[in-house]
Length: 127
Length: 480
Image (tube, each protein chain N blue to C red):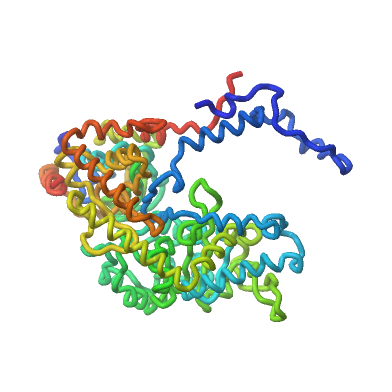
């Protein structure tokens, strides 16, 4: 699957969609969902939680293991995608629609990559 | 096979109760249930066959090789059962007066003394029911210690990234924040990363040594020193003690508190076979906080329970833990004795290195050095080249009558299979296992599709683990 060009990416395989109001949506990349395999549970934070760039704020559980999802930005959780709680398979089916959280009041961010740069990184890890 | 509920026939039963020899009393109306519970109604022979059928569908250490890494599935000698079945141990009540259960208290005190000697600790509690419960108890001791010293700024527990998943989970349960410490390329703790992470907010470190990739951390003295100098305490996860028991002591490595898994290292039933036991031992500085009661000598040749411990964290389980498990473990320790305990550890390490060496020609080892009690295979290359995964090899082993190794753990190894043969297996069994691994490898080369299908000869074929995890059915729905 192609990584959409209008999104930004972290080295830890999250995608970031910048919204018009300055907040961002965050999800897991296609590469990440592929590596994890079929997801069976997504643990989300609560609305209003403070998150810190580079620190774990969600987890994604497959039958193999639980993996942490790291926040690309420092800010406050404005909304969570509750649909994922009952339907974790959405992340496998369409990773770029299956946003985990929306974060606002952003005061800092991780180093973010463009789609081409991220593809290079993922290809390197694949080897 | 049928569920026990599906075997139920209204009015059938398998108990003939004797006449009641005490006055019949009834519960207050408000406490009496309105409808009878829907219990299965079956004859004794049907019940017996039901369980026998279930038993035939399982794989235990009495069925075949069971190299489940970090679980130490050693054989449980029958003599342990004989000791635990003695009426003086079995037919007692936890509320009996102390003077009538002196033998049982002696078991607790003797087991404590011997296990303290093996671990280099000063006192031990037998209350925790299993390993993770022991971890929580140990962390609560660490927390009580810091808080008693008015040192409330210590909010973090350091855990290496190769740790058992229970470690970070227990730390979170105890109210701590977990800081993951990376492993170096040698599979051991990255000492410089640890040095950077340790500080005035460090409550402690949780470490398994030998670790989950089967390596003894050579820097262990430096590691515990770094944590102590930062003001933290060191917790030893005893899951892998089998590799070093009677040879190296956590207390001498600098640890302040340890938990043991009697159901792993000390040959008591494991998994579905019975309750576990996760005793926690500690150095003098943590003794005041141990759970109550503690069994001890009364100074006059007898034994008593000490409840008067004002700084205790309280009880973590009812009564004294799973007492009969302790009786089994004590039997094992006394049977092996001072020479047998280290010999068992040496044989565990020998067996492991033997099997690893026999598999090295076709399988890639995650860390290709000598190992302790377990080793980790990585199927990363086979996955890429042949499409054969760790899961496929694990399922293939089932067709050879072998319980699969631990899969996809530790997390730091891709496509991991973690193999722990234990000391109880003979050379012949290890040779058979090696041949099974080799045959699976040949199948992976010639007919990978067959491995995706496996197991072919088990009571149930490959199960849909994803569907089971996403839509677990945990309840029987009665037809009416």
